Every structure is written in C-alpha cells, then in structure tokens.
Image: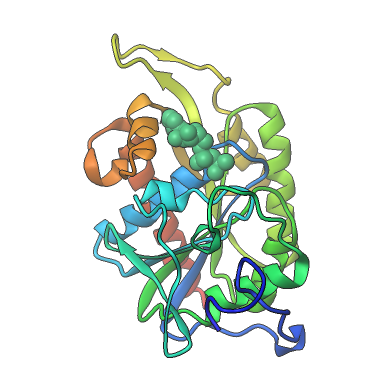
Length: 280
Ligand code: ADP
C-alpha cells in the first residue's frame, strides 16, 4: 500500500512492532542526521551532506522524516511531487543524483498534519522497508528535531550505522545537543560527529566575520563528550538563497565557504563510518 486508503495520508495502522529491527536490503549505511532543537539548519545541512556524499561518487538516498516541517521538497525543487508506487513499493523521486523520499510527498498542501503514533510508525516503516531504494552506500535520514518517537522508532526498525548531530554555537542549543547525543548512546547508535552550523557570519560585502551566536561552543562540547567535531559551517547568505531557490550549494557553488565546510563534514563523517566498519 503506498497512497491508497481513507485518511488523508494514505497510511494505515502500524505493523506489529515485534517484527523487530531489519536491515534495508541493498543499503549499506543508514546515517541519521539529528539536532537537539529546531531551526539550527539540520535539514539544510542534511540535504547538502547527502549531495556532497553523492559528489564523491557514492550512491546516496535521502529520507526526509521531519514530520514537523519537511523541507526536502523545497530544497530539491520537488514541491507538489506525490509519492509514486510500483509493485506495491514506493518509488523514490530523483534529484541532484539522490534518491529521495519525503514525508512532505504525502501531504496534499501546506496544512499541518497531526501524525498519530501508529500512523507515523507505519509511514516510517514503509519509507524504510517499502521503498525501492536499490543499492545505496548511504541512506541519509533527516530526523525531526529533539528526541521523540521517530528517533526511537527508527532505531527499533532498522540498524543505524551512525548519527551526525547539528547544532549552533549557543549554550541553549548545546544543552539540547547533549540530550540528543545521550539518546543515541542509550540506543547503541554511534555518533559520527557534531557539526556547528551558523558558526559565524560572513559578510557578502566586506567578507568580514562576525560571531553572532558566539563561537567554538560545539568544538568545546565535543572535547568534553569525547566526540568528533565535524567542523564549522558559516552563516552565509548564499546558502539560504540557494536553499530557498531549490538549489544545493555544495553542487551549485562548491567553492563557497559554507559548501566547502559541509563537503569536509561529509568526508569526515564517511571516514568515521569507514573506521567503525573496519573495527567490526
Ligand atoms: P532545521 O531543519 O534545523 O529546522 P533549516 O535547515 O530548515 O533548519 O534552516 C532554517 C533556516 O536557516 C532556513 O531558511 C535555511 O536556509 C537557513 N540556514 C540554515 N543554515 C544556514 C547557514 N549556514 N547560512 C545561512 N542560512 C542558513
């Protein structure tokens, strides 16, 4: 069942959770992208991370599971795209070299949907195991902010190879990051590293640098928690403009400072995964 049924989302009752954790055939690494709170740029970074990985020649999928505000349809110029099905499976959209499924593809318009537990779990299960992902090196999952049902259900449904956590430099965001990190540790998901977004502002006129939200908080928190710091992404107008226009900065302007920082974070996260793999 892909998009039939009586409710507006076409999602029926949840499967029995006793079915347990199952790998996704053909998918080598499921990588969760998380944040302690909303508005830190998690979706922007996840989408650009996924494209940066694809630009290295990897086969990459992107699953937008951010139930509170799916941004992937906008970021990839896929607004209005509806889930398509074939042989009882979801067929992902394709853009920027990625296979893409977004919870936003289920919504008729911009009306917020109140996802009830079982409906949400059924949708997540179908996105993971009922989608024709094919052979992928990485399936990047853009999680909702915080530490809620989707995060817990994801790790119960499929093995997650690692998580990347996005934060801003302020203390408030960092407190929430620690909660997110602890949640992943509790459920046995390795943290690949932390990205500090909006780390500093790069003025497009004078190229001057201003540390609007403070600076260096995430690097310090990583040192305290023994985590890998994946780098600083500047607050850069070009990144916001590209995102609003449905373009991915890592592909349209790979030399822009924010694009370079994200590409480096992607390479470091991939190296962390490879290291985990080699340690078995
Ligand atoms: P989240 O997924 O954490 O809620 P978003 O990715 O939707 O956050 O980002 C929120 C807003 O901030 C978007 O308008 C996005 O374009 C903008 N944004 C995110 N990161 C940056 C950055 N480094 N520079 C400029 N704008 C950014």
